[in-house]
Length: 208
Image 1 (cartoon, one colour):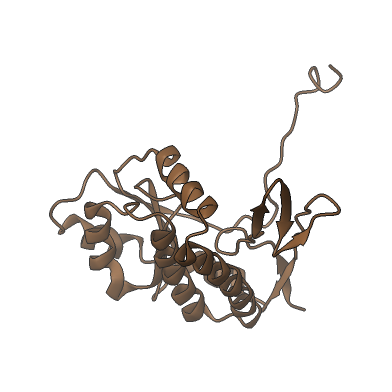
Image 2: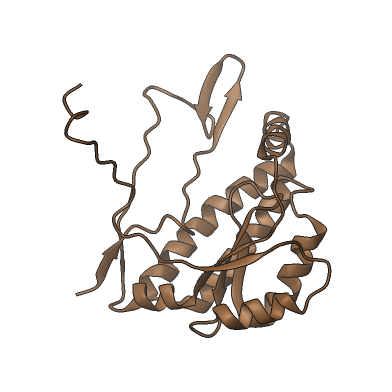
């Protein structure tokens, strides 16, 4: 029986919404109802969740970011309907389906390739979101990973890795320690959350 899990770390859905005059549309068709987000539960091979956990690492790059300016630039480019941005958005959607299939097949190396490709797509969407020190970090880690990407809008913060070999925290720490020009980085173990965020209220607040 394949394991069931929600893959929210790599797999993302994108709704392509265009504005024509005062009437919003999706791919040129007028909207007759509100947009809905549908979540698909992906079946992965038995043992793949643990394998993924063994190969996942999170690196704090030491570089903080201000995502607001990056997001403003992305929105301006989108509303301007720049061809490169529109095409990139379509590529993001297409790669999401390919990434989902890689999860179903348990293809770790393909997930890594999609992860790196996803970061390249994000850079095309928001030029300038990759600091020089982060690029240097990603370059020295490239031989040790199937793929890597900055989380969020880019600009610094956290870098997540899918390593070629399992349990590589100490190896990654040693490689980065020998690399000049990096900030106060730190390497962390990370696991896929199969339950999602849960909020529990104290009994005294539950009936307020």
